[in-house]
Image 1 (spheres, rainbow, N blue to C red):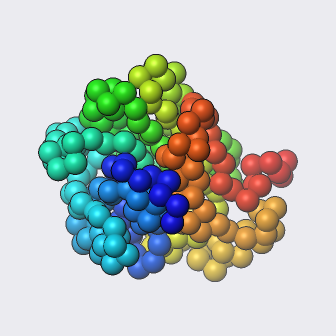
Image 2 (cartoon, one colour):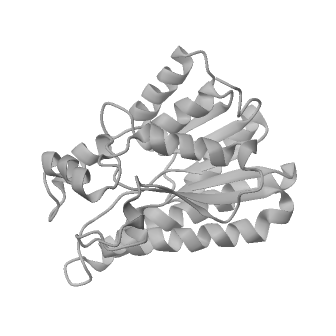
Length: 266
């Protein structure tokens, strides 16, 4: 621990995990706490959030569990009000909620497509809408949005809603960065590549048209220049950098955490 977030309040959405182990949100929440932040562990699954809180407290950190559905403004506004009532400020907003549904425009229903936009993009609009006024009053803040390499390139399987929403998230982030720079607020996107988290086992490997878990893990050896999948801590450390004062001159950009995959031509 070096206290890189000492005195800060960090709100992490999707800070639970879909299964045992370390998801991106859980790792980020614990790492932020290790670096001195008081962490708000937000998730619509209270039991998953409570487990993350337990891990933070077990290490001597301070955490607050918040149940919230980030696709609904009233739920997020209630959460933000509770956080401000307890801590008085929000210094870091880490938007980690997301998920994919496979299919192209022929196979995917209109409702599923709209659901993808809501989950991966509108949710970030809603959290920013609720949190940015507090950051403006403070004159400082850092927003970190979690994108995906699926928003940059076709990866061999169709997920048009996920791809469109994650691509849109990049430009949304840039818009926020420019608009609120003079208020002392930075906004950046972390873009994970092939990451091995509980999500891979409990959701991705069970989607229609996707390979099984063993194949998903094996393919990284040939597709990723570093020859392996990353893990949740790789994503968390990237988020920590962007949340910290070390990134005080970094805004409106994307930080790839993909083992070099996007640098390949094929």
